[in-house]
Length: 325
Image 1 (tube, rainbow, N blue to C red):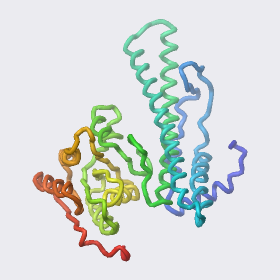
Image 2 (cartoon, rainbow, N blue to C red):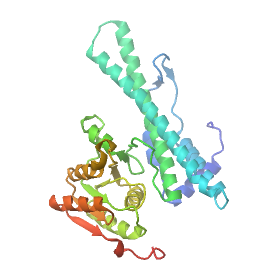
Image 3 (cartoon, one colour):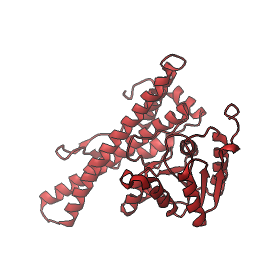
Image 4 (tube, helix red, strand yellow):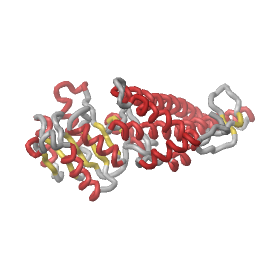
């Protein structure tokens, strides 16, 4: 795609997306920024003048790529595979962003080492300047890639009703959709410089429930009530892939609420679920929702009560019939 491309069709796609509540223009404008006229993408390459791509063009391209796949396969025998293909697109953006982040971290470490070992020579000054430019260039490209990933993830959520989540590790971002954060990353990151992303500050609302649950509106209504009282809330869940936790995660994605997913630490053996409960309670939640499930949920509710956390209990019998829900 170049600057002479006819964007009539792409602009139409974007207008339609905004009609459905997906407006990413501000995110793209703030992510595709050129901090310097020069760019450097590797240690061996020389600095060169290279512009960032036009944010409108990239926004249109991502929107067209994602939604065309759903539209082409809709109402056909291959419709069920559109979700898998779209997840692959989102995950590709995510993996490239992670690789860029690794290269950026390497450059930042080298820059720190150079800053600590000052040398008045011209060779040192050039290396310091090149390393800073490399770090800056990679940071800008990583932010742009994350913006594209989050845009694709939002389209995925709108089309499937489910938030995009990576197979492993964390997806952290300040834009568009809820951050899906692995609990181990969350806990370890408190000492890192990127604390504001991996440990989102705000009152924690704890959530856990069984895997058998169909009345999502019952849970969404209560979560909406809590969000009105605690607008800066962070939702901490027990990270089950279906049932109550999946319903709560989908709610968070639709409302732009950040999520911390506390997955089981298998190294704890049979105690893993109870250790996970302790870790969430240790966050000192402002409020909690527990839906009837197994003994794990019962244990969680007991610990929350003992800690004096305001608690909302939902039992299976409170659900509407599956047909009504």
